[in-house]
Image 1 (tube, rainbow, N blue to C red):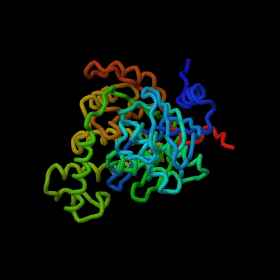
Image 2 (tube, one colour):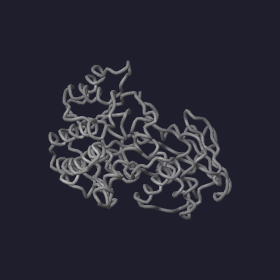
Image 3 (tube, rainbow, N blue to C red):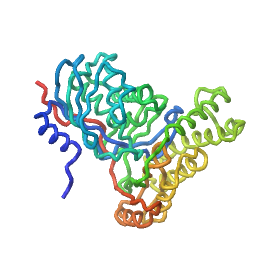
Image 4 (cartoon, one colour):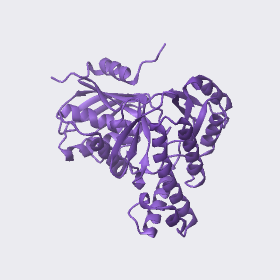
Length: 383
């Protein structure tokens, strides 16, 4: 029997605790098919939204300009957020929420005085953007409450500000943008300089498999910052605006060998992403899968953000029926990998990966997914 969705659970808990919610909004996690660590280098990515959501059921409670925010979240209990307080002092997952509450008023959007229940189907720490989905859902529900509409890119920009200024992670804009603006049935070629999304349908002959290694990132933020700093040093040495502008001849002249490898990954990954978008448009799943596998090798060897669990599950995927290509996805080091699989082999692929994956007695999980819709209003009972 299917389990209740995050939306259903959020509504049920809210009714039991506080009564019928005024608003219910959901926002999806994402997987990136190719184009990793290119977004903060003004490059290209090819993500899609997942059928895993974070849902917020909300009721106004007090003054929308100053009242306390009270949130009940599955697994974390109840927490109160002072909208006038310093959001960087809020602990753990709630810092993402406190950042939204703190920054929205500067855009003319009241963000205080509400209570809500939050539920999520997105595995945390698995590189599927659970934090971005929380930010997008929170921004969207407060916009709807205020009777204000924003474009997906504007929602994404605020979510990125929360990550950069409140959480302290120097991330790009991809995760929030695809969570806010994805089109059902499509991946999206994202130009991270122009901030544009171009939907591209996933060929019917293939499915996307998400493979959770059951490993989780520890202190990955430091390594992430190191990679970004290496890219910035390369840009300064080459005298260009971003690595998007670099060519192989320029990169070969970078003096520091580590910085050179980091830049080499970025420029080759940008090209792979553009080639993958062309392959997807033409239904060439063979080329798309090959490019994904080449991406993994570059992330492992040049950018050095893979990990033993990720390498093990990619190897299991490549030796399983119907696999056209596989790679780590997300920031790296742990979490999830993604594979392109012939649709007719989806179940045998899943069984094979579960049987072949061997890493520290961890039990993998595998889901076959179709691209989902971006953030949306589930219900609006405001008078």
